[in-house]
Length: 417
Image 1 (spheres, rainbow, N blue to C red):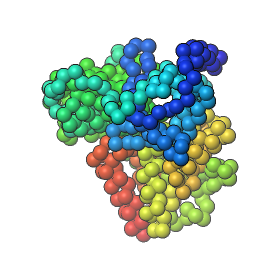
Image 2: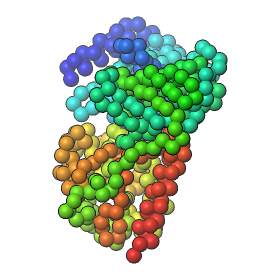
Image 3: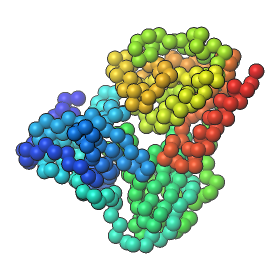
Image 4: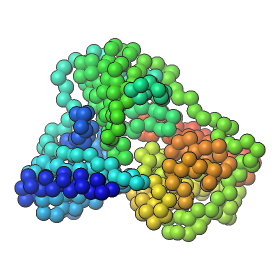
């Protein structure tokens, strides 16, 4: 922590010395860069508007617009607190159309810090410049993808889903634990570039497009982590191998949950309370630090409005970065407020990093394989279906299929006697 404070002091202090006394976050299309030592900077875009004479930022990734309104300007400094994932920007004004500082993401035992700079381009908006007018191929469609570390010691199978219009490219990658949300970029000749930033994820993907059937030489950059490599082959039937409910349920243990955890107000809530009796119950295992959980939570809020009157209850179980209830309480409460969640979200006393998190909280499960993981419980209180991960709206058709699957499960449980 001392080193983090020293680094922040040095970065911000040096910038203050350069900065002029400006205090205008001017409206327009901004291009931001999270700077890495290896030069693989993570690019994203945001728009600045005014609301009630106060600046509002909209972080843009493909079709997503993430509103940020917690902005404080003090003399030549600007502090931008992002609505989710416990992260923020601290920067100074170099001039009316340029800021420079750091992005800070608060983790369990340390802060992740990356240098940050942004420039206002007025009405012009671009993420990556294209140098070659014509792409070598149109890569729209599904791609069987493999991500590996540099030594190929660990490989994760994924599915790339892309939509290309001329040089413009959007899409995402589906993985066993969820998707990489909204990605946006370009195809420049035989070069692919995609990036995304939402305060939780800070991602950059590059690769060479060999032809319409093969992508090679890919680099996958996440935050300050070491680059990973990836490649992909066109495959219209590409799909992930999921965990089945039977594999996740502990054998010899009744598939009936029995837990009591505190809600965001500190009140103990039990799954055995009358509000859950003889109801179809959806239990959402999540974390306020988890971008995929945010996507599922938005959908779950819709499900609750549609099905509450039909005999469906939803309860969230939050596994936060630490077991500190006060810290978790603040993060989860903000998460619920921003997403307008009306059902209870309970805070487990176990940190997400605890290898015994399932054993200590949900002993009916062999493991919690991903965040989010969703449990579907029948009127008898027994687990009937478990779904690991969530394909969010950035995945297009896969998102629609995911929603239909959830609706079908709930409808079938409601229809069962």
